[in-house]
Image (cartoon, rainbow over all chains, first blue to last red; front, top):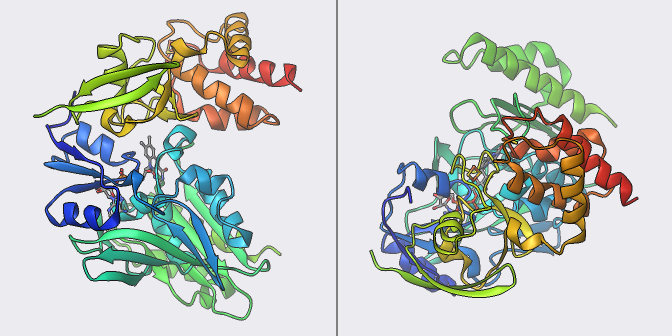
Length: 265
Length: 156
Ligand SMILES: Cc1cc2nc3c(=O)[nH]c(=O)nc-3n(C[C@H](O)[C@H](O)[C@H](O)COP(=O)(O)OP(=O)(O)OC[C@H]3O[C@@H](n4cnc5c(N)ncnc54)[C@H](O)[C@@H]3O)c2cc1C
Ligand code: FES
Ligand code: FES
């Protein structure tokens, strides 16, 4: 047994879960990130609150033009098509390339966003899709745009007494252009650079550059990047002087590849 | 630290055990239930040696806490004796020299069986992609890939 000792609680309703978290318990979802942190003793909580048995924790509901994805929905469920339509097809393609299937069977979209690893896939893709986080706290639900949800390395806009309840993504038309390009030396390892581009007909294209050791960089209007890709990609990556040359070069490639994919009919 | 009671089904048999909350499933399986077919490598979810089936799907037993498995159904490599797909994989693994020291093999087989059942149309590239989460230090993977492809082809 590698972790420092902790107690285990299994809340069966959300108010109990919120009370546990307010009293200092660490939320545990799939433990696919928390498990390694505990084994390394980088995390030493007094108590884990296992969220996996909460009502409506996992699952997808569509209301009008919004798709609500429960925080406990696993990467594997998304890979297998739990999210409908064009949005779901985009997300399934992303999910398939997160870690490995046995990790995806337990790891959750909510755990991934709350963990806020700069290199994580949903951290890059959710702001690109224009998603909104639904946080649940003592005073009820609160909406936080994913553009701005991750505030630093392993830091989010969630308050210490809040849980991530769900993520809301828009129902996208079939005709959207989508590009997602990430650089990994080995399948399943964390990305070294990720770029995403979403081009919805009639709206400004959006781009995200991520996995650069900090929160994702969201480019809310990427029209210039679409029009003059190489020059604009060069200009964007020059805004990261702290990175090694090779990493900036990969970032530029990532932006160009994501634009090329999003421009395909 | 106080221990917690856990009831689970392991390889078809009910088990009632007491665990420390920090104990992971692999330690429970190996240490308490003496099912040493499940191997432990990295304990970070990376190497795949500890892969078992939890509630019907493959999962890492090194980053799944025993306490979170209260009520779960777990199947380890020892629980596949009568499984037809696993029998075919065992045969193909020995035919294709898909193991040498055998350390990776229990996790490899659980992953391989999932590929065969979930992705019946998988080609070589897909099999390699799906096996990327199971490390083997001996074989160089070619025999393992051939063994999985062999079983896939035989079932078409
Ligand atoms: C070998 C390996 C490779 C991986 N590769 C990748 C990869 O390529 N890309 C990628 O994106 N991810 C990768 N991951 C991480 C994986 O996607 C995890 O599933 C994910 O990061 C965490 O999800 P979880 O449900 O397991 O959360 P947990 O590990 O249970 O929790 C993670 C953190 O979030 C907090 N938390 C969890 N749920 C909530 C909630 N609802 N509200 C508030 N806080 C919460 C926890 O307290 C903890 O701090 C990898 C993991 C492993 C083991
Ligand atoms: S021991 Fe579990 S993945 Fe390596
Ligand atoms: S056979 Fe030795 S590690 Fe795979």
